[in-house]
Length: 81
Image 1 (cartoon, one colour):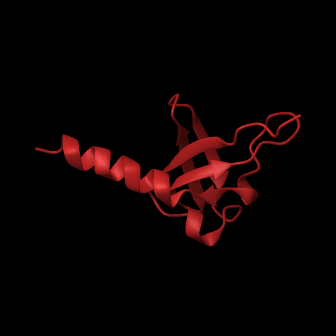
Image 2 (cartoon, rainbow, N blue to C red):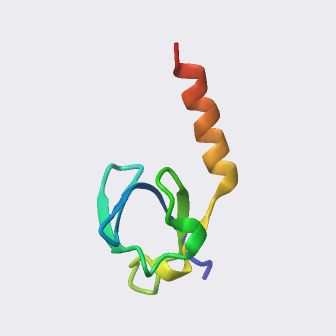
Image 3 (spheres, helix red, strand yellow):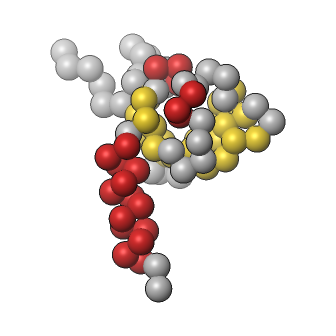
């Protein structure tokens, strides 16, 4: 059986050691920033978090998706006046 598709989220804020992540369905996740890898703690970062057998995100194993970040930034730049 293939591995489930990772959960894609954006870091919307990092404050007081807490990271707020939002998925494309606008669901929010509040995660201790200490759990995230160093490169995954920046506001605006796009992360892909693998899921465990129960479908829960494994935040410590999340990886930054640089290609998706660039794609979204390019899309935002096209919308800007």
